[in-house]
Structures are given as structure tokens and as C-alpha cells.
Length: 180
Image (cartoon, rainbow, N blue to C red):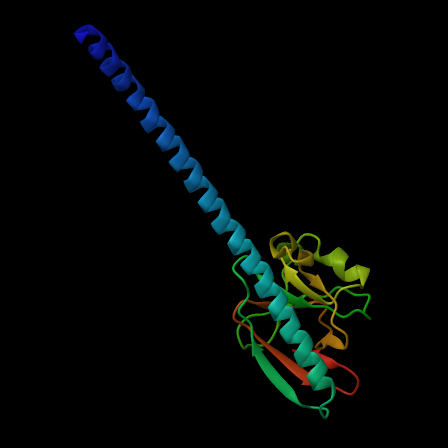
């Protein structure tokens, strides 16, 4: 009988490492799942931030369409983490002449529109969307392409792109709102 008890103890000792290994595997799976959930949550937050910014600009454009010509409002742009530029294009223009505005200074010519986004030129030539968050693949929400009625960039810029931290100035014109 004493021998039988010893055998049971040996079996219990041999099974204990498997319990620890199983617990470590389960803990790793829970950790991986948690990290994935955090990334998914950040992605949803990024989409929500883009949507909220688009809705805010759309609301301001609709509001300023009812104001007297010359009324203006500055909007300080705080773009979501992955987005480098917010661009406004002119749906009525055939030319592509990119300008970039950084900070509160005057817009400067783009050295190369392909540096902003490789497909930006073709999106502008398609003349369907005039509010563009670039790079498009990082925007996630409708690929960062939206249409806002009565919004046009200032001057001959097409598109006029704003870097993070720049000030978007909306100014009421006779029949549209100008982004400068």
C-alpha cells in the first residue's frame, strides 16, 4: 500500500508543470486579445475623430453660407494621429495646383503632390469629393474623402492642404464659403 501512494504522488508532480504551461498559454492568449482590442478601439476612435471634424466643418460651412459676405471664422486643425493633411479641392477646376498651409502663415506651393498622397491628383481630377484627409489609407472612414457643398479653396490652389496645427479660415463669399 505504501508503494501505491508513492506512485500517485509522482503522477501528481508530473502533471503540475502541464497546469503551469496551460496557465501561461491562456495568459498569453488573453494578453494578445487585450492588445488587439486596444488597437481596434484606437481605430474606432480615429474614425470617430475624422467624422466629427468633417461634420464640424460641414456645419460651419452651412452656417456661414447664411452670413453676409466677408464673415469669417478660424478653425484650428488638430488632425488625428495618422492623418498628415486636410485638403480642400475645387470641384469646378480642371487644374491641379497644390498648395500647403502650415501654421498661420500663407500657403506655399507643394514641392510634389505625390508626397502628400500618391492618389491625390487622381481624386482631385475625378471632381467628386472636395474635403480630403490624407494619406487616404490611414483615414479609414470612407477613405478620408468627403463632399461638402459650397466649399472651395482660396485663389488658384487646387487642392489647398492644411498640415496638423494649421488654421483653416472659412470666409463667406457671394455664393460659396472660401477655405483659406
